Length: 189
Image (tube, rainbow, N blue to C red; front, side, top):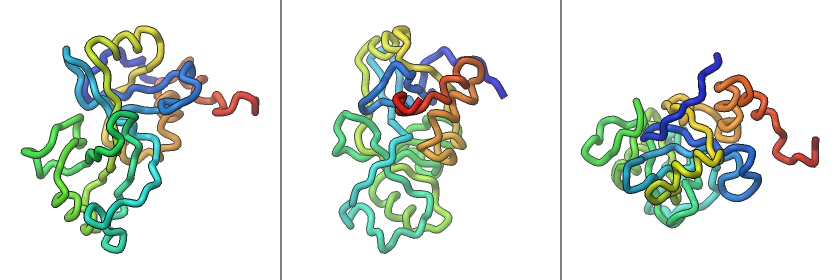
């Protein structure tokens, strides 16, 4: 199904890196915008897995029962800061709703309880974030560095991260679907 390109940056929007971003942290990146206002924007890179060992007081791997826990490189800013992106609506006083069924926030107790619950929520532990000052993201968008797509719980938590960039472009149809087929390494072409 072809969707027209989305044209409004707002909370709950995906930023999809264009092929013009040829290397670095945002290469084929998909960022979920968590806040966008007159003061600036911030979001989480959700399609880059992060392989790291966490201290047992955060996650005890031996107690990990919930199979829906993932670790993501959330962005290049404050990479030692962990944010929880999840599907649990029960802790509204601790969270910010990003889009239907997707929330940002929660504390260590929530995380501990969720990892020990086989039927617990989907959770991404995001280390770092992406941030833009006033007007900066709009300029990057107008300069052609990002495409936009409406985010949803299914795409965020149930699309394999290594396939999300291509999936979103293919979903947009037309020239975007063609771009989704560009090989990562153009020398292989």
